[in-house]
Length: 68
Image 1 (cartoon, rainbow, N blue to C red):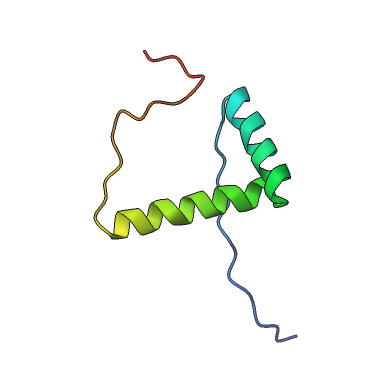
Image 2 (cartoon, rainbow, N blue to C red):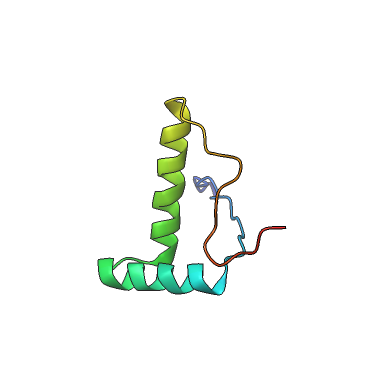
């Protein structure tokens, strides 16, 4: 069989804090989208900002995570 193969989407795993997971689920529920969609949307925004020359701060505060 000669099937056209669709390119595979890369999978990435990220560990979130309990609070981040809870807030993402709430946002997804309110916006009637999946958590995966929210994450893809956030990644796309980061990529767009990077392409415009904007740089993320290296010391990003993360709610619920202790600083070493």
